[in-house]
Length: 604
Image (cartoon, rainbow, N blue to C red; front, side, top):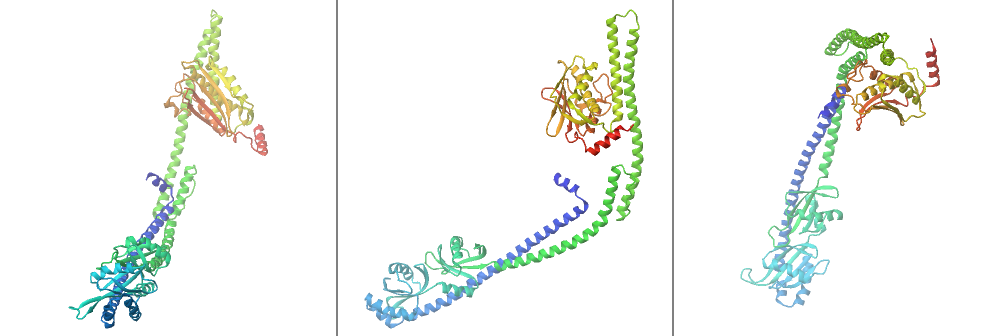
């Protein structure tokens, strides 16, 4: 959450106004499309469900009409005396030969005559050879139940069958001579007729086997796999066949029949028309959304121009003031609130300019006061030492050894005053142009060490040099040597306070990008309270003498060379100060620039 807030805070006002508009537009468009899609899909599903119900009712009406016709046909044929006389013959061959004529007369797809004990006497099937035993077994259960109309699945074909008993004499008291059965196949032609009447795709199935349908062979294969989930679906189930969605329903062809499994009619209605409507609605909503976005963006840009343009001018004024330019003129434009803000900023800028002048003056006086206090204390200390030792040396009876010792203390005081004056001189010159020349870095380090050895603070301190090479760089050798000398002097002073044998190590190293000078000592390190301010001027905590300018000068000199100073405390308790100079900054400029620089430096 905080990360998102930080990003928003960095955006410009115009972006903050446009981005929410885009989010609102896309959100509203997606929401509208979703709602419309749900409404259209629900309406499409309701319409398809209604069409499915209508299709099923239409088929049931056709089925009822066809069943009545078959029932009348079977009744009329059962009343024919010739058929009754034929069944009284009792000769199976005679019944088979004569029964063929009755089959041709009925023009049915399935015709059969049965004995009173439900044995098949004669049977005929169009376009294939009738399997008598299978057909007899299927028919016996229906005939025993006295069903006059039912369905049979024979050789993978579905038949609607009407059956009637052959009775000699009165229908209530007469004797049964046998049974007659007439059947019609529910084939592809019938399925297409039902499909046209129901305005839907239809199929006939038995159990989990698809018998016939109006779908293409590929879709029928997919529907075959989906049949188990359509066992008892009468209200509609969504199926996906061939990448297209269908609403499907399945109803048994004989709700109260004894067929096992009961044959079913499967009706499918496509969602394609609803999908076309959804796409049309999506296009209209998207077009209207884009129109609203363009109109809103134009209005918003017009409004934002009157707000953001004066604010941009005000922002430029703030940047100019931050850069120290207090003469930048603000444009008096925009809304009244923005103009008032610009006038308030002008007043604030004037006051800030005056306050800055006063603050700079006060800071300058404070800096001069701190410097004067530090210099006064140190000079007084050194002069007192020189005066006292000179007074002792004036005594004629003073032994030569003591005179030499006093002379050493005078020399130490003189060195201290010299260091102080050199530091002040370099501090005052910080920021001026460097006097660069090609210098051997090893020679610069050796000169710094030689100057250090003459200082009393380096007495009894082991100073070692490592990694010296023939490396040369385009630097100000005097200033760079002074920076290294200051670090070495600080290292010696810190090492002398250590409980171990004091030692300072000076190392020269280089890599692909930097020239590094490391000064390490085995002193007690720098306290955390001083680490935050140790590169500031006049910070000399823990030292008996000194102005606190050593690290400040070293940092300024490294910065003038394009580098920096780093401080670290190693795992083996060594304090390391490192001057890192980028190799790019240590390269000379072009020949013309060098000539200009040298001529400038040579000018008296």
